[in-house]
Amino acid sequence: MKKVRFLGLDVHAETIAVAMAEPEGEVRSLGIIPNGEESIRKLVKKLGPAEQLQACYEAGPTGYVLYWQLTALGVKCEVVAPSLVPVKAGDRVKTDGRDAMKLARSYRAGDLTAVWVPNEEHEALRDLVRAREAAKQDQLRARHRLSKFLLRHGRRAPAGIKVWTQKHEEWIKKQVHFEPPAQEYTLLDYLHEVEHMGDRIRRLEQAIAEAVKLAPPRMQEVIQSLRGIAQISAVTVVAELGEISRFEGARQLMGYSGAVSSEHTRGKRMQRGPITKTGNAHLRRIAIEAAWAYRHRPSIGPRLRKRQEGLSEEVKEIAGKAQHRLHKRYRTLSAAGKEKQKVITAVGRELLGFIWAIGVQVERNRKPVA
Image (cartoon, rainbow, N blue to C red; front, side, top):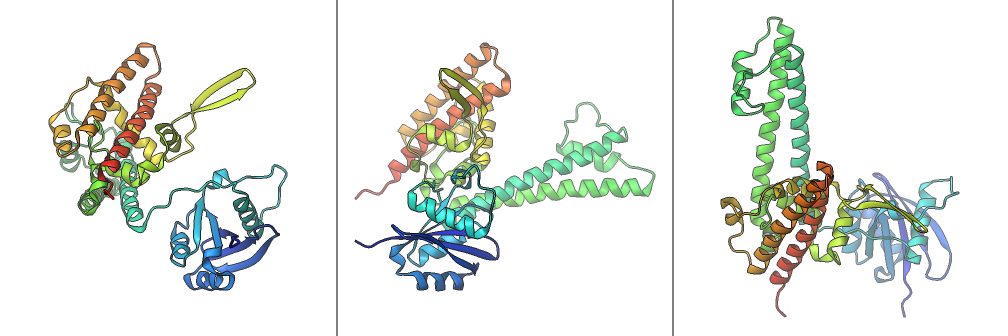
């Protein structure tokens, strides 16, 4: 039987600290190598054969490039969750070499939790979706700067004009002016930034629509049947989750989003607190935003009916159950006097359960028959 050697890699932008744990022996540091494809290839060749190596490193800003490089060389690699790496309470010395040795030792012991790694196409879609989300945040900041500038100088839109509509922007362009040139330049700059952010978002949304057309049918179908989740939100969910069937159950998906309650239990005393928020913030945001749609009575409008065209009857049935159950949940919690935001969070958490059920059903329907 071939013995496997475990590699712990502490990865940085320019360097990688390498440590190795023998199957039943010592854990030793192998030094620091440059973070580059050629250096990785030489390391594998030196320590090989590749099939007897297993490597791990912490998820972080360097992404999954190292994972793809090692996998291409035939080395089994796992990216682990940094927050779940065991830490000794009394350890006050932290270096790259010690971190690499700790990873190698914990990996050999089976104490690390691996995260899901997307392929390059899936990662590209996720980057595009997150770029659009960043653009929305930048747009909000730009609008705030302009609105607060107008407020400081007592410029308010006439009654009947809703803010950030086309009429609102036309009012700013045609009727808002300042005598001092400095203030006029400031107004024009703020207005230009708002328009620039709007154009940026439109370009990104068009790019997402084009990317969806090229995506596999399975990705196009997932989540399209649910109320409150239109194309952009659906693409965000798919991009963040990947293979939904990798979650063993709905509760595991809820925990992945960080939308579950924190808990502190000792003996007979059990105390539940706010949601943990230790999970995928992008997924959690989409679920909670979509949950507001379930304030309304169950119905299938023209847009939802169009999105559901071509979906299987099983998926439509799950979507129908979601509408009735989540609306009932919203009314029950509201009638009990719960805070509005807590009610929406609870509904969003249950919505994730239906997302899991629909995702698994779609993947099962699309699974090729042997």
